[in-house]
Length: 280
Image (cartoon, rainbow, N blue to C red; front, side, top):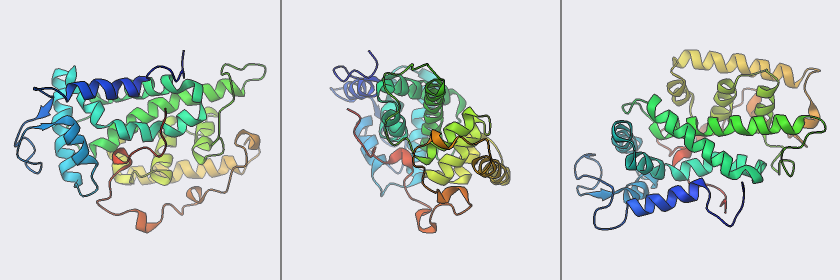
């Protein structure tokens, strides 16, 4: 039963399997020297994860380690795919935590969709790209978001309640405005993700451009165009104001963006920050 707290969900199962792979006399590990900036010895992947999560670790080291893991997951699959997913698990939990709060009886489905998005993203991502964690977690989050958008669309239908309860707070989160905009056809899912991840989240526009496979200048122009369409919809007669309860005025939709001090060049991405809430 989806959302049943008496059994482990997909993320909990992943953590358990990841722990097994990293234990014992022959743990899944990166060999000494394969990433020169890591300690020069064999490193089990749970130790690699701890190092990559540390704020003192540079983006260069993170990308190098994840590039090795991604390359092996693409070439061999199996335990290396589990290993890569386990290293990214904190980022996956954080990226989907809002969706799990919105639809608490769909938590297992949301987590499963995120993992499916990650697996699909592995095949679509070059191991030599920069900001690999941000891209892979972004792709996983987008697949989970599509599931939530479908659930909210079902809830919006009159006389039809597919979920046991309506979405829980924070139903008024600005991200839900973007979900509604996708449902109404104002934005496509990628455009909503571009706005949400660069205005509300921790992804920079250059990172988003690389994730989308477009030029940086194109990404800025695309975001400006989509934000203009979004503002026009929000201020026009077609916006269903009751969809988001008590929606506060968002500073992210008028060009203000994130505070400048929040854009430090080497700040850890959201993929390397523990989730703000515990799911279970």
